[in-house]
Amino acid sequence: MPYRTILLPLILLSLFITGASAQVRKDLIHIPSTIMSEQRADTVVKAERPYVMVEWELSEGFTPPYCVSQVAGEDTLFRATTSRTSFSVGLRGSEWSKIDVSSAGGKSFGVRMTYTERSAAWIPIGLIGMFVAIAAICAWVYAVRQRKKLDGARREIEEAKTRHTRKYDFATVLFSDIQGFTKIAAHLNPEQLVDELDRYFIYFDELVDKYGVEKIKTIGDAYMCAGGVPDNDSANPIEVTLVGLGMIAYVNERHNEERNFWNIRVGINTGPVVSGHLGNIKKVFDIWGDTVNTASRMESGGEPGRVNVSESTYQKIKDFFECEYRGKMPVKYKGEIDMYFVNRLKEEYCQAGSDHIPNTLMLRKMQLMRIHDFEQSVRETTLDGAHPNLLARFDDYLARVYTLCTLEKMPDEEVTTCGAAAIFSFIKLNIPKDTTVSTKGAEDEIMRKMHLQESTRESVRRVVAHVAGGKEPEDRMEEILTDAGNEVYGRKDIVPQLIALHEELAARGLESKSRNAWLGKQINILKEVTYHTDSARRLCEVPKAKQVEMIEMAMAI
Image (cartoon, rainbow, N blue to C red; front, side, top):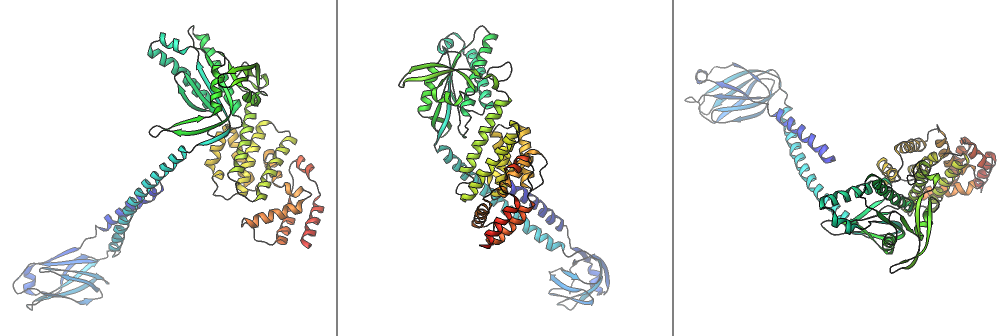
């Protein structure tokens, strides 16, 4: 914690200073009564400065009150306190001094002292150290109390958030159920039953985690999960169908290994759902709606060892999976519904030797879908309420990036990197630094949710840092993003585009120059702009000389 990091060393340092200063002592000088009776002057004693305490034996005739005075030396007597049998003095100045002590009875004696230097700053430092220690401890206690209050408030906010329901317009729900589980449970001992069921569910958990699907709950032998919640994901019908096929494949694998096996039915449906958390002691995330009910009907109306999907799911996955139309099937409370069996991934999208494990091409297509989801999320959150021209520039920039990727015939892997890097770099260059999307931690979390591999994430980070830093591009991805950023300087409507940009920056408080001064600056930039890809050069609509002439004409108006 920050306050611990600061306060703890401060307390330790102040206690050390206080402890060191506490070792300053007064030098005690003892004067025997025999010396006082003889009233000997110039009694030489050695002491260390700055504090000297003189103590004597009580003798007859030498009675209080006493008077202490300096009779020789260059010292300044800045402290003199007396008691019945002693006095202490604080001295500042030369290396020796002489002090006279006289009593009310008329007796007196003198002491000549020589001493070595002791820094007088120890006591002020000690006092400051004590003060700092006390202040630091008080600040520590206050910070701890405030931290507890903040933690409590944060928990209340989180609880309020979790209780807030949310509607999803596009989610996919899966139900799976073990065929004849009631009969199976009657013939197995409890330990064997639980172990076997746990083995299935552990593998199902691994599947949903692999494809970014949310596990909702298990009810007895039924397993329920959903895609597109709690984060929007346009690839969720594909992901959930892959989970269903993976479940069936695992069951078939167990069937080949053992004679006694369990078989399952899987049903899937796509549509709107409502989500929320229920309970107080043990909160449970759940979803509701007609989509959930229909998914349950898809499972109960299916066949063992098959994935049964509704018409709405089929329309979303038909380009990637081989499906078998079952016709209109009767469904309880629903009438007749079109149903399809999903047999396998299409051959061009699955790994060799498998019918349900996606290959690199399929994974890239799914990643591009998630990148488009992120793009839409930026529009709805980070750019919500932004200047209209900023939104237009965001759309133009991404459109030019994907156009250049297509014209340059970039492979899917590089298109994925360019798409993600384009969004992050635009935010870094155009959105205030305090936005949560522009931080490194936020970038990593977003890319993790997009299921980007670590090598791809590293490429995105590198490209974003290079482009946002204004450096010269070093590879084709950086060239495409740089050329897309300079797209405005190749347009035939450059003048209205630059004027709109000036108005946007002025409205956001990022530009204070007059319009003509701004256009003059853009002429200088235009003359220096160089496109790095052949595609960007071909897309330029107007030569530079003509563009400069148009800008100068606008300045003259």
